[in-house]
Length: 112
Length: 115
Image 1 (tube, rainbow over the protein chains, first blue to last red):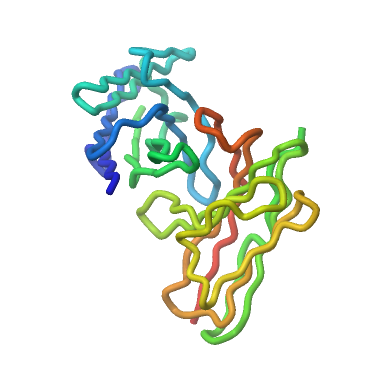
Image 2 (cartoon, one colour):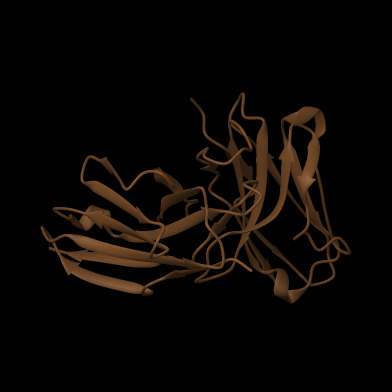
């Protein structure tokens, strides 16, 4: 079955540094990969989507890479701010392309 | 544009009681999803609707859970009877299309506590 692993449950960094979160997957090759942000008591919010034929995608201070050989996606937040503190979820489409499978998430804490 | 609306936001019930959650998706979104999210975990799909048709309910515990989406808009998820293990956040999401590659828009969720 499809498995998704996000490298760590928690990541603590200082303001201004670049945060890098990792998402690894096994057992299949998704056509799409998405990243969501979730704040406490709220639903996930879509951030970025990257397709299997795309190596990298950027949006403001966010950058996502997708390495289908390594079966890994990296999510970067440059010039991090305390407001970036949240849980970040990686999600892949299932083999049928009909649903998203989410990782457990990585909780990022940015200290000033 | 209004987002996905869910109610209630919180619900506390005793085990064996019934409970229902309501969702109003973003206008024009054909696909509606119900997810369950346990503490420290990512959301897990329970059921997906394309308009009024349930096209993926393989993860829905059908002995106690039921769902409907009348007229292809609002949806209701019901649990009867509730068990202690059903305590979780129930999230509703919608997307423009159910095919891969479309972002999903989530509601705030209903936090269910079963005592």
